[in-house]
Amino acid sequence: MSYSVLAVVAVLVVLVVDLAVYRTRMVTRKVFWTAYAIIVFFQLLMNGVLTGLDVVVYDERAIWGPRIAYAPVEDLLFGFAMVTLTLASWAAVNRRANTARRRGLDTETRPSSTR
Image 1 (tube, rainbow, N blue to C red):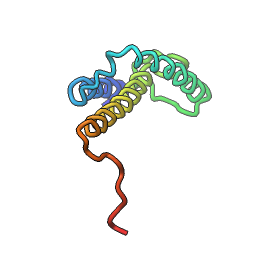
Image 2 (spheres, helix red, strand yellow; image 1 turned 90 degrees about the vertical axis):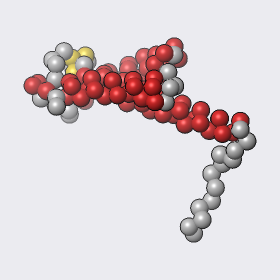
Image 3 (spheres, rainbow, N blue to C red; image 1 turned 120 degrees about the vertical axis):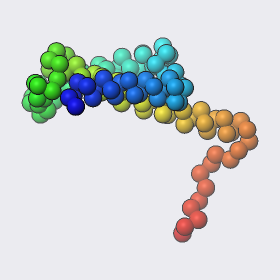
Image 4 (cartoon, rainbow, N blue to C red; image 1 turned 45 degrees about the vertical axis):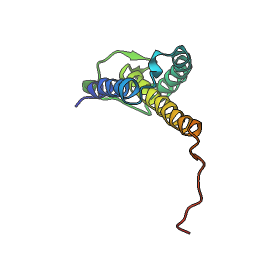
């Protein structure tokens, strides 16, 4: 499987996780896209440095070809998938903790019993 195909699959899987599994609908929120714009700026900056200085080199046969800041566009897809999955997971865990707290369930960390 090529780098390009993996990048597209990663985005599709994360969208399914966000919208159907976690149901956080992270990608539908304005605040997500605002935060993502900031993250993309720094991602492009670092990709430009790493690929521009040949610290990271891509096999031209494994990518589509177009580049942004020296890095293949597929890097933006992987970055999107990574950031979205992280934020959606965080929101899902936080929602679960808040739901448990509202129901009066203890969500505090307990000391280990394996001492």
